[in-house]
Amino acid sequence: MINQKAILIKELKNEKEWKEAYPVMKQLRTHLDEDQFLQLIQEAAQKEDIQQVQQVSKASWNYAYEGIIPFEIQESFLKFAYNDEMMQKRFL
Image (cartoon, rainbow, N blue to C red; front, side, top):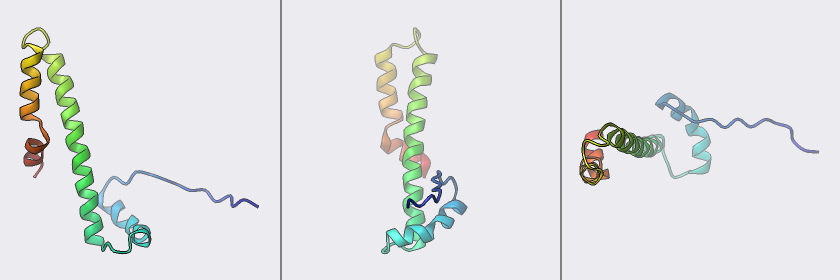
């Protein structure tokens, strides 16, 4: 007989939801306390935010300045202004 229990998988979007998920994570990662778990989640979220900002910036710059600023100059500026190191400084 197959267990017909439904499994719900959802994205956790805020600290309250992260804390609610900690008891399950503790079973899987017994070495993590709640503070360590929250720190890992926040770091991962920040990396995702940085990547999204970089993608939006590139698309909007290329669209807004097409025919005004040569593409190569836009790309050079974007690589300088929106690289991972610069974005991390902005997010801190």
